[in-house]
Length: 70
Image 1 (tube, rainbow, N blue to C red):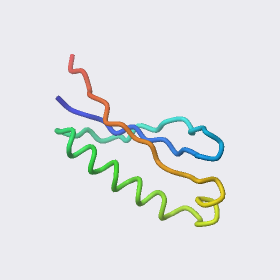
Image 2 (cartoon, one colour):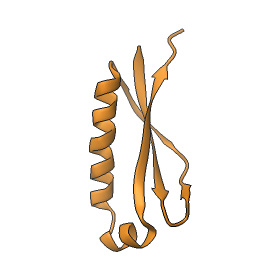
Image 3 (cartoon, helix red, strand yellow):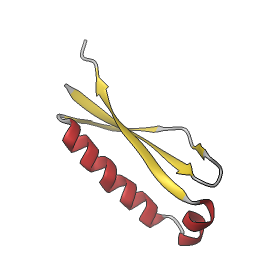
Image 4 (cartoon, rainbow, N blue to C red):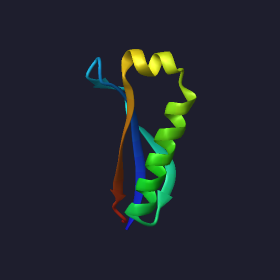
């Protein structure tokens, strides 16, 4: 079974998330997908302005969605 990474930028202050984005890659295991999710979440947050992260209390939410093979 393969997995795709689905990520969304969320605001704790506004209790909402942006529309989720599907990463184009497919992962051979849930573990590989989850590790990539944490790495991409950290990279994304580091790229945003500190003031914006703190004022909106931004965080990344992600899931590793199984791909059903036809």
